[in-house]
Length: 265
Ligand SMILES: NC(=O)c1ccc[n+]([C@@H]2O[C@H](COP(=O)([O-])OP(=O)(O)OC[C@H]3O[C@@H](n4cnc5c(N)ncnc54)[C@H](O)[C@@H]3O)[C@@H](O)[C@H]2O)c1
Image (cartoon, rainbow, N blue to C red; front, side, top):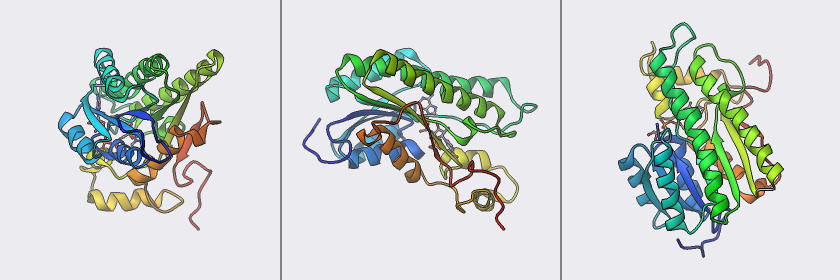
Protein backbone atom coordinates (compact mmCIF):
# COMPACT_ATOMS: atom_id res chain seq x y z
CA UNK A 1 0.00 0.00 0.00
CA UNK A 2 1.38 3.45 -0.85
CA UNK A 3 0.49 5.93 1.92
CA UNK A 4 2.15 9.06 0.48
CA UNK A 5 -0.95 9.99 -1.52
CA UNK A 6 -2.86 13.09 -0.36
CA UNK A 7 -6.62 13.24 0.00
CA UNK A 8 -9.57 13.03 2.36
CA UNK A 9 -8.86 9.32 2.97
CA UNK A 10 -5.07 9.42 2.74
CA UNK A 11 -3.50 6.42 4.49
CA UNK A 12 -6.86 4.68 5.08
CA UNK A 13 -7.60 1.07 4.13
CA UNK A 14 -11.18 0.29 3.10
CA UNK A 15 -13.14 -2.76 2.04
CA UNK A 16 -16.12 -2.00 -0.20
CA UNK A 17 -18.69 -4.72 -0.89
CA UNK A 18 -20.71 -4.65 -4.08
CA UNK A 19 -17.63 -2.95 -5.53
CA UNK A 20 -17.96 -4.31 -9.05
CA UNK A 21 -20.92 -2.17 -10.16
CA UNK A 22 -23.25 0.75 -9.50
CA UNK A 23 -22.82 2.59 -6.21
CA UNK A 24 -20.07 0.23 -5.00
CA UNK A 25 -17.95 0.85 -8.11
CA UNK A 26 -18.44 4.63 -7.88
CA UNK A 27 -17.42 4.47 -4.21
CA UNK A 28 -14.25 2.47 -4.98
CA UNK A 29 -13.26 5.09 -7.54
CA UNK A 30 -14.03 8.02 -5.22
CA UNK A 31 -12.15 6.44 -2.28
CA UNK A 32 -9.06 5.77 -4.41
CA UNK A 33 -9.14 9.37 -5.73
CA UNK A 34 -9.05 10.51 -2.11
CA UNK A 35 -6.02 8.39 -1.25
CA UNK A 36 -7.49 5.19 0.24
CA UNK A 37 -6.25 1.68 -0.48
CA UNK A 38 -9.41 -0.16 -1.56
CA UNK A 39 -10.35 -3.83 -1.35
CA UNK A 40 -12.97 -4.26 -4.07
CA UNK A 41 -15.16 -7.11 -2.79
CA UNK A 42 -17.96 -8.67 -4.77
CA UNK A 43 -19.60 -11.98 -5.60
CA UNK A 44 -18.75 -11.04 -9.19
CA UNK A 45 -14.96 -11.48 -9.09
CA UNK A 46 -14.36 -10.59 -12.76
CA UNK A 47 -16.18 -7.30 -12.29
CA UNK A 48 -14.27 -6.59 -9.08
CA UNK A 49 -10.95 -7.25 -10.86
CA UNK A 50 -11.84 -4.77 -13.60
CA UNK A 51 -12.60 -2.06 -11.03
CA UNK A 52 -9.43 -2.84 -9.02
CA UNK A 53 -7.36 -2.54 -12.20
CA UNK A 54 -8.68 0.98 -12.76
CA UNK A 55 -7.44 2.03 -9.33
CA UNK A 56 -3.83 1.97 -10.47
CA UNK A 57 -2.07 0.20 -7.60
CA UNK A 58 -4.49 1.51 -4.97
CA UNK A 59 -6.80 -1.45 -4.98
CA UNK A 60 -7.19 -5.19 -5.19
CA UNK A 61 -10.13 -7.49 -5.84
CA UNK A 62 -11.50 -10.27 -3.69
CA UNK A 63 -14.37 -12.69 -4.17
CA UNK A 64 -16.89 -12.22 -1.38
CA UNK A 65 -20.39 -13.55 -0.87
CA UNK A 66 -21.47 -11.23 1.93
CA UNK A 67 -23.92 -13.80 3.30
CA UNK A 68 -21.03 -16.17 4.15
CA UNK A 69 -19.13 -15.72 7.42
CA UNK A 70 -16.23 -17.79 6.11
CA UNK A 71 -15.93 -15.63 3.00
CA UNK A 72 -15.92 -12.47 5.13
CA UNK A 73 -13.09 -13.82 7.32
CA UNK A 74 -11.03 -14.59 4.22
CA UNK A 75 -11.63 -11.15 2.68
CA UNK A 76 -10.89 -9.26 5.89
CA UNK A 77 -7.64 -11.19 6.43
CA UNK A 78 -6.63 -10.37 2.89
CA UNK A 79 -7.39 -6.68 3.49
CA UNK A 80 -5.10 -6.58 6.54
CA UNK A 81 -2.39 -8.64 4.82
CA UNK A 82 -2.26 -6.23 1.88
CA UNK A 83 -3.26 -2.95 3.52
CA UNK A 84 -1.48 -3.46 6.85
CA UNK A 85 -4.67 -2.60 8.81
CA UNK A 86 -8.35 -1.88 8.21
CA UNK A 87 -10.09 1.48 8.82
CA UNK A 88 -13.32 1.44 6.81
CA UNK A 89 -15.97 -1.11 5.87
CA UNK A 90 -18.61 -0.06 3.32
CA UNK A 91 -21.47 -2.57 3.19
CA UNK A 92 -22.83 -1.68 -0.24
CA UNK A 93 -23.67 -5.08 -1.82
CA UNK A 94 -27.41 -5.51 -2.13
CA UNK A 95 -30.21 -7.18 -4.05
CA UNK A 96 -33.76 -6.02 -4.62
CA UNK A 97 -36.95 -7.45 -6.02
CA UNK A 98 -40.18 -5.54 -6.51
CA UNK A 99 -43.26 -7.03 -4.84
CA UNK A 100 -46.05 -6.24 -2.40
CA UNK A 101 -46.69 -8.41 0.64
CA UNK A 102 -49.16 -10.42 -1.48
CA UNK A 103 -46.66 -10.95 -4.28
CA UNK A 104 -43.62 -11.67 -2.13
CA UNK A 105 -41.97 -14.98 -2.99
CA UNK A 106 -40.31 -16.80 -0.07
CA UNK A 107 -37.07 -17.42 -1.99
CA UNK A 108 -36.81 -13.74 -2.94
CA UNK A 109 -37.49 -12.73 0.66
CA UNK A 110 -34.79 -15.07 1.97
CA UNK A 111 -32.26 -13.81 -0.54
CA UNK A 112 -32.92 -10.14 0.29
CA UNK A 113 -32.62 -10.85 4.02
CA UNK A 114 -29.45 -12.94 3.50
CA UNK A 115 -27.62 -10.39 1.35
CA UNK A 116 -28.97 -7.04 2.57
CA UNK A 117 -29.40 -7.71 6.28
CA UNK A 118 -27.29 -10.75 7.24
CA UNK A 119 -24.53 -9.63 4.87
CA UNK A 120 -24.46 -6.19 6.48
CA UNK A 121 -24.54 -7.70 9.99
CA UNK A 122 -21.51 -9.86 9.19
CA UNK A 123 -19.69 -6.88 7.70
CA UNK A 124 -20.41 -4.85 10.86
CA UNK A 125 -19.52 -7.57 13.36
CA UNK A 126 -16.45 -9.03 11.67
CA UNK A 127 -15.36 -5.69 10.22
CA UNK A 128 -15.42 -4.08 13.67
CA UNK A 129 -13.31 -6.89 15.15
CA UNK A 130 -10.81 -6.55 12.31
CA UNK A 131 -10.57 -2.76 12.61
CA UNK A 132 -9.94 -3.04 16.34
CA UNK A 133 -7.46 -5.92 16.11
CA UNK A 134 -5.46 -4.28 13.33
CA UNK A 135 -5.13 -1.00 15.20
CA UNK A 136 -7.24 0.95 12.73
CA UNK A 137 -9.85 3.55 13.60
CA UNK A 138 -12.64 4.75 11.44
CA UNK A 139 -16.08 3.93 10.21
CA UNK A 140 -18.55 1.36 9.01
CA UNK A 141 -20.93 2.74 6.38
CA UNK A 142 -24.07 0.75 5.58
CA UNK A 143 -25.86 1.30 2.28
CA UNK A 144 -29.53 1.63 3.05
CA UNK A 145 -32.45 3.22 1.19
CA UNK A 146 -35.37 5.56 1.71
CA UNK A 147 -37.20 2.21 1.99
CA UNK A 148 -35.35 1.63 5.28
CA UNK A 149 -37.07 4.68 6.78
CA UNK A 150 -40.45 4.96 5.04
CA UNK A 151 -42.91 2.23 4.08
CA UNK A 152 -43.17 1.49 0.35
CA UNK A 153 -45.98 -0.92 -0.57
CA UNK A 154 -44.38 -2.34 -3.72
CA UNK A 155 -41.03 -3.32 -2.17
CA UNK A 156 -42.19 -5.01 1.03
CA UNK A 157 -39.31 -7.48 1.41
CA UNK A 158 -36.58 -5.07 0.33
CA UNK A 159 -37.92 -2.44 2.74
CA UNK A 160 -37.98 -4.95 5.59
CA UNK A 161 -34.33 -5.89 4.96
CA UNK A 162 -33.27 -2.22 4.87
CA UNK A 163 -35.33 -1.32 7.95
CA UNK A 164 -33.30 -3.95 9.80
CA UNK A 165 -30.10 -2.25 8.64
CA UNK A 166 -31.35 1.08 10.05
CA UNK A 167 -31.66 -0.38 13.55
CA UNK A 168 -28.50 -2.48 13.31
CA UNK A 169 -26.56 0.70 12.49
CA UNK A 170 -27.92 2.52 15.54
CA UNK A 171 -27.26 -0.43 17.89
CA UNK A 172 -23.71 -0.76 16.65
CA UNK A 173 -23.00 2.97 16.92
CA UNK A 174 -24.17 3.03 20.54
CA UNK A 175 -22.19 -0.11 21.38
CA UNK A 176 -18.98 1.42 20.04
CA UNK A 177 -19.59 4.55 22.13
CA UNK A 178 -20.25 2.48 25.27
CA UNK A 179 -17.04 0.54 24.75
CA UNK A 180 -14.96 3.56 23.76
CA UNK A 181 -14.13 2.01 20.39
CA UNK A 182 -12.82 4.53 17.83
CA UNK A 183 -15.32 3.35 15.22
CA UNK A 184 -18.47 5.11 13.96
CA UNK A 185 -21.39 3.49 12.18
CA UNK A 186 -23.63 5.37 9.74
CA UNK A 187 -26.31 4.42 7.24
CA UNK A 188 -26.91 6.13 3.91
CA UNK A 189 -30.46 6.32 2.53
CA UNK A 190 -30.65 7.12 -1.18
CA UNK A 191 -33.71 7.50 -3.33
CA UNK A 192 -33.77 5.71 -6.72
CA UNK A 193 -30.30 5.47 -8.29
CA UNK A 194 -29.58 4.85 -11.96
CA UNK A 195 -27.79 1.48 -11.61
CA UNK A 196 -28.17 -2.12 -12.69
CA UNK A 197 -30.49 -2.80 -9.75
CA UNK A 198 -33.03 -0.24 -10.93
CA UNK A 199 -32.64 -1.33 -14.55
CA UNK A 200 -33.29 -4.94 -13.56
CA UNK A 201 -36.45 -4.05 -11.65
CA UNK A 202 -37.87 -1.68 -14.27
CA UNK A 203 -36.99 -3.67 -17.38
CA UNK A 204 -40.37 -5.34 -17.59
CA UNK A 205 -42.52 -2.32 -16.79
CA UNK A 206 -44.86 -0.99 -19.47
CA UNK A 207 -43.44 2.06 -21.27
CA UNK A 208 -39.82 0.94 -20.97
CA UNK A 209 -36.85 1.93 -18.86
CA UNK A 210 -36.34 5.52 -20.04
CA UNK A 211 -40.00 6.45 -19.59
CA UNK A 212 -40.06 4.89 -16.13
CA UNK A 213 -36.89 6.79 -15.17
CA UNK A 214 -38.63 10.06 -16.08
CA UNK A 215 -41.67 9.07 -14.01
CA UNK A 216 -39.49 8.24 -11.01
CA UNK A 217 -37.54 11.50 -11.39
CA UNK A 218 -40.82 13.43 -11.27
CA UNK A 219 -41.59 11.90 -7.86
CA UNK A 220 -38.46 13.48 -6.41
CA UNK A 221 -38.68 17.17 -5.45
CA UNK A 222 -35.19 17.92 -6.77
CA UNK A 223 -36.40 16.68 -10.17
CA UNK A 224 -34.25 13.66 -10.94
CA UNK A 225 -33.13 10.32 -9.56
CA UNK A 226 -29.66 9.97 -8.03
CA UNK A 227 -26.44 9.02 -9.82
CA UNK A 228 -24.03 6.48 -8.29
CA UNK A 229 -21.61 9.39 -7.81
CA UNK A 230 -24.16 11.38 -5.75
CA UNK A 231 -24.32 8.45 -3.36
CA UNK A 232 -20.57 7.71 -3.39
CA UNK A 233 -19.94 11.32 -2.28
CA UNK A 234 -22.14 10.78 0.79
CA UNK A 235 -20.35 7.51 1.59
CA UNK A 236 -17.01 9.30 1.29
CA UNK A 237 -18.08 12.01 3.73
CA UNK A 238 -19.52 9.49 6.21
CA UNK A 239 -16.35 7.38 6.11
CA UNK A 240 -13.92 10.29 6.40
CA UNK A 241 -12.69 12.04 9.54
CA UNK A 242 -14.81 15.04 8.48
CA UNK A 243 -17.76 13.09 9.92
CA UNK A 244 -16.06 12.54 13.29
CA UNK A 245 -19.18 13.67 15.22
CA UNK A 246 -21.62 11.60 13.13
CA UNK A 247 -22.56 8.10 14.29
CA UNK A 248 -25.81 6.14 14.50
CA UNK A 249 -27.21 8.57 11.93
CA UNK A 250 -29.26 8.07 8.81
CA UNK A 251 -27.93 10.31 6.04
CA UNK A 252 -30.53 10.92 3.33
CA UNK A 253 -29.49 11.25 -0.32
CA UNK A 254 -33.04 11.64 -1.54
CA UNK A 255 -33.48 14.98 -3.32
CA UNK A 256 -35.89 16.02 -0.50
CA UNK A 257 -38.18 13.03 -1.14
CA UNK A 258 -38.73 12.33 2.57
CA UNK A 259 -38.76 16.01 3.56
CA UNK A 260 -42.55 16.14 3.60
CA UNK A 261 -45.65 16.16 1.44
CA UNK A 262 -44.61 17.46 -1.96
CA UNK A 263 -46.78 19.52 -4.28
CA UNK A 264 -44.94 20.22 -7.55
CA UNK A 265 -47.32 23.20 -8.08
N1 LIG B 1 -30.46 1.37 -7.36
C1 LIG B 1 -31.28 1.93 -6.49
O1 LIG B 1 -32.30 2.52 -6.89
C2 LIG B 1 -30.97 1.90 -5.02
C3 LIG B 1 -31.67 2.78 -4.18
C4 LIG B 1 -31.38 2.81 -2.83
C5 LIG B 1 -30.41 1.96 -2.31
N2 LIG B 1 -29.75 1.10 -3.15
C6 LIG B 1 -28.75 0.23 -2.55
O2 LIG B 1 -27.49 0.51 -3.12
C7 LIG B 1 -26.64 -0.65 -3.00
C8 LIG B 1 -25.91 -0.89 -4.30
O3 LIG B 1 -26.83 -1.25 -5.29
P1 LIG B 1 -26.72 -0.71 -6.79
O4 LIG B 1 -27.90 0.15 -7.02
O5 LIG B 1 -25.36 -0.18 -7.03
O6 LIG B 1 -26.99 -2.07 -7.58
P2 LIG B 1 -26.03 -3.01 -8.46
O7 LIG B 1 -26.88 -4.17 -8.80
O8 LIG B 1 -25.39 -2.21 -9.55
O9 LIG B 1 -24.89 -3.43 -7.43
C9 LIG B 1 -25.06 -4.41 -6.46
C10 LIG B 1 -23.74 -5.15 -6.31
O10 LIG B 1 -23.86 -6.10 -5.23
C11 LIG B 1 -23.22 -7.30 -5.65
N3 LIG B 1 -23.77 -8.42 -4.89
C12 LIG B 1 -25.01 -8.98 -4.96
N4 LIG B 1 -25.11 -10.01 -4.12
C13 LIG B 1 -23.91 -10.11 -3.48
C14 LIG B 1 -23.41 -10.97 -2.49
N5 LIG B 1 -24.15 -11.97 -1.97
N6 LIG B 1 -22.14 -10.79 -2.05
C15 LIG B 1 -21.37 -9.79 -2.56
N7 LIG B 1 -21.80 -8.95 -3.52
C16 LIG B 1 -23.06 -9.10 -3.98
C17 LIG B 1 -23.51 -7.40 -7.13
O11 LIG B 1 -22.63 -8.29 -7.79
C18 LIG B 1 -23.33 -5.94 -7.56
O12 LIG B 1 -21.99 -5.66 -7.87
C19 LIG B 1 -27.55 -1.77 -2.54
O13 LIG B 1 -27.38 -2.00 -1.15
C20 LIG B 1 -28.94 -1.25 -2.81
O14 LIG B 1 -29.90 -1.83 -1.97
C21 LIG B 1 -30.00 1.05 -4.48
